[in-house]
View 1 (spheres, helix red, strand yellow):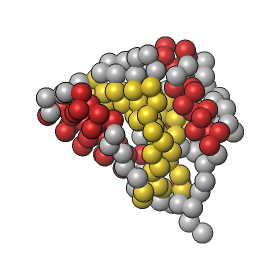
View 2 (cartoon, one colour):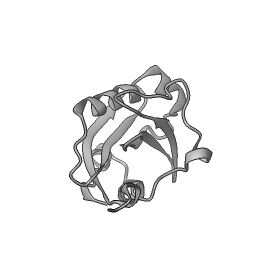
View 3 (tube, one colour):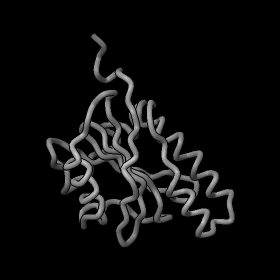
View 4 (spheres, helix red, strand yellow):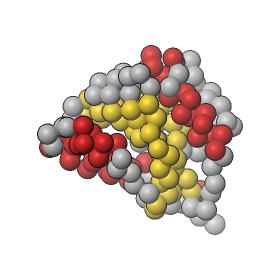
Length: 150
């Protein structure tokens, strides 16, 4: 039997999460053939719009993405050419670290499977940065998702 940590993942786009200072593309990252409760997605999106998240996730460019995995929510915001991310604990339909984020130094920035999503987002962001950054260019960035095997 394969170790679950080493098992391939899939990316499932979950649309756009918007609040007063951010527009974040939302992903669920799952084991193949795994289903995620829609409640988990709603809960994660609600958290991203919350006052707690607003205090911990700076706006910078106002654009970014979030990845909900088995037990973490990784929220990254673009600051020019730098991706600044913050990780929150997530467990059993509730966040267990809503008061303060998890320390990246303790858990790392991204897991190997998240890097597939990060690579897609990097390429989409470069395309946006190299554009004239019109409204259409922004729409193209926020509408570009990766889906499937990572």
